[in-house]
Amino acid sequence: MRRILLSILACLTFVMAEAQIVNRLRVDQETFLKYAYGRMEQFNPANLALADSLYAVGETRNDFRFKCLALSLEMPVRYAQGEYDRMDETAAEIKSLIGERRDSRDFYFPFMHEYCEYLVRIGRAPDAMLEARAMERLASGESRPSGRMYAYRIIGLIQSSRDNSYLAIQNMEKAVRFCREAKAEQDLPTLFILLAQENVKMKDFEQAEKYVVQAEEYQRFFPAIRIKALMTRACLYYAEGDMDTFWKTYETLISDPLYQMQADADSRTGLDISYLRSRGMLEEALAKADALGKERARLESKHGIYAELGTYDKAYDQLRMLMGDKDSTYIKVQNEDLAILDAEMNNAQLREEAQRLKAQNQMTILLGFLVMFVIAFFAILGSQWKLRHNLEEMRKKNNQMLATRRAFQKAMEAKESENDYKIKILQNRKTNMLRL
Image (cartoon, rainbow, N blue to C red; front, side, top):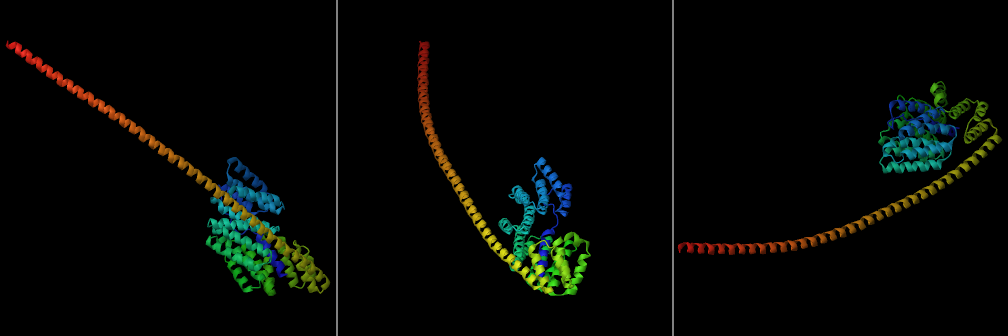
């Protein structure tokens, strides 16, 4: 029964949004308030109309921000209505809009985290694991601790869904480390709740208590944490066998209006069954168990109740079906791991091929530049040679013209000397004639 309650608490954690709604895409205040109101009731079908209106604005203005907000509102509704293909299409469109935009990572990582949570809930852990590892690589490459926090939290949730609490705790602790590094304190209390739940599964009640206390320190800022913490405490007290404290916690929960608003039906049913069993009301608990949505939770609950009633044949039947379910789950997990490994190997091959093509393109570009350089070099050499040749020819012509000019000048000077000599002779003759 303890495992049923813990599983239901884990499911509740998926549904209850823990982070503050932040205007990460920097739209105008009026648009953001509409979006924030829609996120407060994220599974409300009315959000589809709001999403359509925001998307239309994005189309008109050619602004990816409005489209992203619209798709973010649409995805939870598609999940709640079981339209998983549409949910995948919505996620794919957001990735295409902002996957390469480094300035939108503050929106991208929380959105992908939410999408992965839904994948885990509908039994598509391999897809969630691939997305989480892709997020981790991207965040690591860009030195973004908030992205790594979201990635390791998803991996922790996947391991929790497989009942591998040891690996779940390891990944959640990494998420806490990166959360603090990113100074994203609003995400810490939910991480503490998740760690408390896993420690209860491991029967480390002292450590679970410490994590609950740490989470409760944030409840004045995040009222939803109080309900999560109370439900986790109820699970802890039931597991420890402290029934008096469990009863008091249960009574506090069911009298709190937030409990009805924030806890889903399976979570409330699980607590009701635990309360009825602790009070010895086994027939009522057995009838209540049929209302559990998950088959595994129903089998575990009814097996324990039949055993307490002494109806061992029915308890055995429930146990046999439960073990068959666990065997199929184990086989499914093995197949999931193989699928993840195969996909990552294919992705690695694709990355290697992309790197090879990139290197080939770079080499082609380099060779092109080299050929262009050689051509330009020889063109310059040819131009220089031709220029020198032309200059030499011009120099020769100039020298010839200069020599001709000098010869002409000498001839003119000689002619002038001759003329001067003739003038002097004429003058002498004229003088001699006057004397006679």
